[in-house]
Image (cartoon, rainbow, N blue to C red):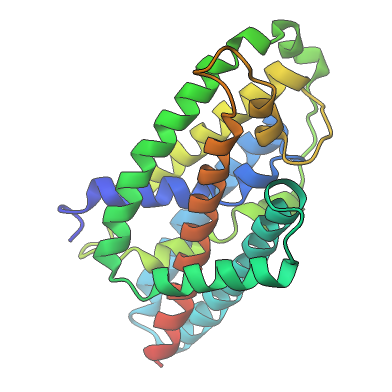
Length: 266
């Protein structure tokens, strides 16, 4: 399965990493993002090692399942709340929070009953769309960029473990979702790396638009909202709504699927 679905696993891992991090973004400075990337790679290798050990030892298996389920449930809750907060504050402010939550929960439920292969195929398709959207948004925003904002002296070198836990601890669950014959880590490794690269591109657009230490809500969305250059680059923030929906959907659904699989196997 690994050989056949390598591009799909790469795409899924990228979007999963992008997840709710691209929605919130605030609090993720450049140094923080690089540190999170390094810790995420270490965590993936440790999770892979833990997975292999759990296949040979029942005690380790139950400990691993408990830890993975805890991180997955936490990530479901955080991603769900982050996305609903975005909907309420930016996209559908007049709509009831309860109604928004029910609508998104139903969408996630329908997504989770799909076969793993269907999720893989869907991830590859929307990954191509999202990369294209980000490229369009970046090109469209060039006229709004202030390159003086790239002054290294203005960058913050703080690191927040809280942000790492909020956005990336769920990568442990991703390891247990991706099913391969030989536990080939390469597609997932490159996928996570691409996900962080996509976050770096989003961060670069934010920095060039608002500065290195801007403190605004949903900064990636706001950096796209300022774009106005004729009919082609008007209302590009609507495309970002799509990006937020897809990444939140995939991350939430994958974590739920991991929990479900762990419970069924008990």
